[in-house]
Amino acid sequence: MFKHIDSSKRALIAVGVAAVLFFAVNMISNIWFSNIRADFTEGRAYTTSKQIAPIFEGITEPIVIRLYYSEEIGKVSPRHGQYYQRVRDLLQQYTKLAHGMIKLELYNPARFSDVEDRAVGFGLRGLALNDNGDVGYFGLAATNSTDDVQVIPFFSVDRDKFLEYDLTKLVYNLARPEQPTIGLITSLKIEGGEPGPDGAPLPAWAFLQQVKEFFHVQTLAIDVPIIPADVNLLLLVQPTNLPQATQQAIDQFVLGGGKALVFVDPNAEAANLLSTMGVMGKETKGDLEGIKRLLTSWGVNLIENKVVGDIDSAIRINMAENGRPILSDYVAWMSLNREHLDPNDSITGDLTQINLGTSGVLEPVEGATTTMTPLIVTGERSERIDIEKFSGMPDIVGMFRDFKPSGRREVLAARVTGPAKSAFANAPAAALKESKDPINVIVVADSDILADRFWVQMNDMGGQNVMVPTADNGSFVTNALENLSGTAALSSLRGRGVTAHPFTLLDNIRRDAEMQYRSKEQALTDRLTELQKQVDAMQVKRDGTGAAVLSDADKKTIESYRADILSTRRELRDVQGALRENIERLQSTITFANIGGVPILFGLILITVAVVRIRRRRRRATDL
Image 1 (cartoon, rainbow, N blue to C red):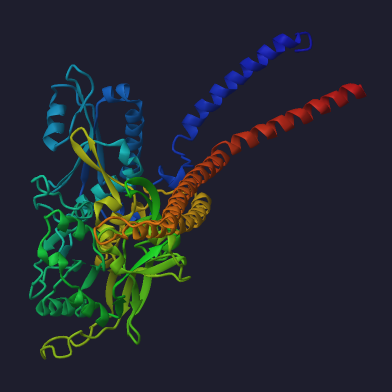
Image 2 (cartoon, rainbow, N blue to C red):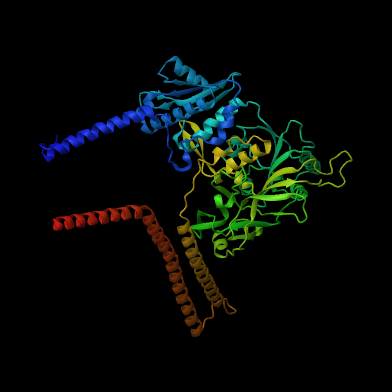
């Protein structure tokens, strides 16, 4: 019937029919497929993890979640509006997983309303929307039947990658209000409260704040004679100068079936840094012989006076050398990815990145009855470095330049299991001489892994400190404690928020080039120093009256040395400049290849397809 309609009208009709079909398909999709979701984001950020199902299935008392959101926030910040939709959708999925044990209530807290008063009463924080004093809310308050309360004062978009973890943790704490008790023994001031350089009290370390969300932490004295009966597991963090009575108490706790997480560091940077600031106790400078004795009885050795470096995982830092700012890879500071973490252990299996600083090395004791299973290891291009090199200001460039890879992976953290004997052969008759059951201890050869600067940033959001992890250090600690206490329900979620996408090829090429330049730079520096010494030695020759004695030959030699010095300095500057230019050129080339290469390739493909089609049309026209 369209034979008598010209081509232009047929085209318009086709467009109209296509538009109708488009809207029809969308309407049908919204009706038939509204509950079907597809998540193509990295790490499946919008998909609930299957491992959390037991948390919701195990809820035995009703939980009410009140989500407060001011619609004005979405008008001012569309990003917050989109984030609210994601929060609401995720909570609605939780209500289905809980089979009616979770009730979700949505509120729009209008100004000066009862809803706003209740939101403020729960501890929610308002965000100023304009200069007129209008305030918007975007937070959550949840309660269980025993009036326990969990609050998120304000949803920060900086933690969007950790949303499922934050919400699941909230439900988990309400569903299981009884928390295991951790006995903390440490010589570090990780609990804060001590006056800092400005006189203000230092905050608790971020990892400890995170641990306290899931456990009751009971601090034990460094000289505690017996572990209290209500302690479920021990957290030992750089416990220096342990008295023998405390060693025996820990020994009996572990042999009796108690679990322990131990951080022992041959070079505790955090302790040394705070000690120089005058806020650490003298005990931080003590020895580790007590804890080493226990480790040996458990089948683990902390290698004496050695720190490990890994050139492929080295963290690149800004520093100053001779008043000149430079960038260098600090081989003793390591950022380790999935390749260095045990994928088969629930502690590390879902983690992405761990940062450590001047870590030690663990080795199994020869003939031990226990088994040491590595959890965190270095790469093969590692080296053991004498601890003396870290006294005072370490020569970071020198360590990089002189690095000699050993070709072996070093163990930085390990799980120790199996039968063990007491570290005290002459213990009282009533004491355990060997473990009742296989022991279960996790040992980490670093305490700086816990320091805030290695894994977390604190952002201010409307007066609220928001903790934004940049590495999985805190998750590693919490996973380990949960695993040891038998409550590893959230470990699958903790590694989903931290992602690392280094240009590995760029880093390797840049690092190899820099090592060559650093070696040449050092040779020129040494030559410069030697020339200067020779000039100084000639100039100090004096007669009996103190006057300088220089022959014409000496003067010519000095002038020759000085010319050589100037030439060497010029060559040194050229080497340093060439290094910087080479690295910048390499970075630009690879960055362009990664960012611009795909669009260019796609464009070339389109042009090729277009040319082929044009040629085909011309052939058809010729054939006709």
